[in-house]
Length: 191
Image 1 (cartoon, helix red, strand yellow):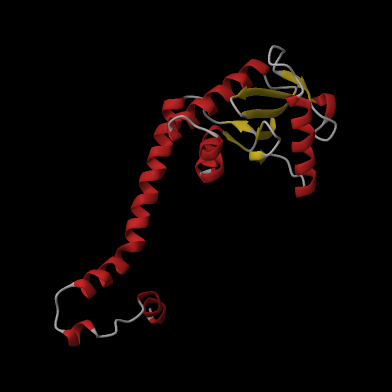
Image 2: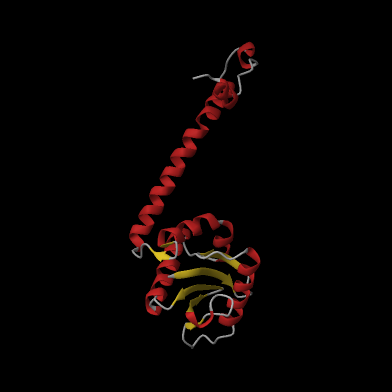
C-alpha cells in the first residue's frame, strides 16, 4: 500500500503532497524534510529505492523516487508493493502531467495544484493504485473538465442575461429599472 506521495523541488520545497495515513501537519512537514534529506544526497547513478526514514515507518517502508529536472517524485510504500511497479507508476504520473500541462514544470504544480491532485486521484486513491493506463486517465480528466465547464456555464447564465439586458439599446427608463438580485429572489421563493 502507498503511504504517501511527495513531490518537492531541488531545494526541498514541497510542490505536491498526499498522505494516505493520518499525520498531523507538523509531522507531515518533518516527514517531507527527512525524505528530502534522504533522497537528495544520493547520486543520480544509484538505485532509486531506499529504506524509509524513521518518521515514516523505518525499515518496514521503502522510498521509491525519480528525479526529473528540478523535481523529485517520491512514493513511500510498504513492503507489499513492487519497486519496479511503483517506478512505472511514477513514470505514468509524470507523463500524464506532461500531457495535461504540455511539458510540465514546477510552476504548473504551483499554480495548478488542483489539476495535479486531480491527476493523482485518478492514479491512486486511499493508497491503492486505481489506474495505470494513461489514455484512460486523460479521458476521465477530459470528461471532468467538460462537466466543470458545463456547470460554470449554467451558474453564470443569470448574470450573463442581466448583463445582456442592461447593454441592449432600450429607453433610459427601462435601463434604469433595478432588477432584483436573482440569488436572493430564489431564496425568497416558497415551495
